[in-house]
Length: 281
Image (tube, rainbow, N blue to C red):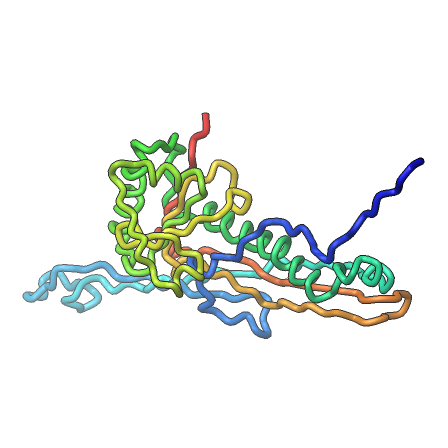
């Protein structure tokens, strides 16, 4: 005699792994796009130093002992927000009821933001930073033996560009962080405040906060990036999420979302970003 065994469904959803965004540690929101689609930022030049002509013998037609009078250059950098993205999905009333409320608007929306929206925004920001980096040396095969030397090259480049030492961030992928931990030359400080840990800082190296992100959110063959947040503007102009109960034509909930965002590297601050590609072959 055949026996039908009981199948039991639990009110539990097998969620995908995901992590919070850490881009706020590497970028800034110094400009306000409210009421504007494009922002233009002035880039003002400077004047060269001269030897003061005390005797006035070389003043020429200008009559100035300070040197030749120059006009300061005043150009602009235009920054537009190009990413206008959206999503929508529906949760039918019976689908919600017959899945034990596993399909529920609030948790579904949170899942959408966590697993889809945040990774997309992060990937865009990191891609713009890598492409706009002021220093991009040739790809190097990173190893436990050379990783510290390559990182020191990055900090040296930022030092020579007179980038503020305070606030620098070292962004790595898990594979490179593993090399760092294997390196005999690197001593990672794990004495990090709880507030910084919550933001995603896992350690400190030579005064830089070390942040680790999945290789899914960075360009292919990403090695590491040293960046100061002053260099990259990463605005989110609009983040609008709505839940409609029983809209026309639907028995249930309609969820819609729209996020308008982008990232820009400031021309005069691009030397505050150093990107090293990892040579994989």
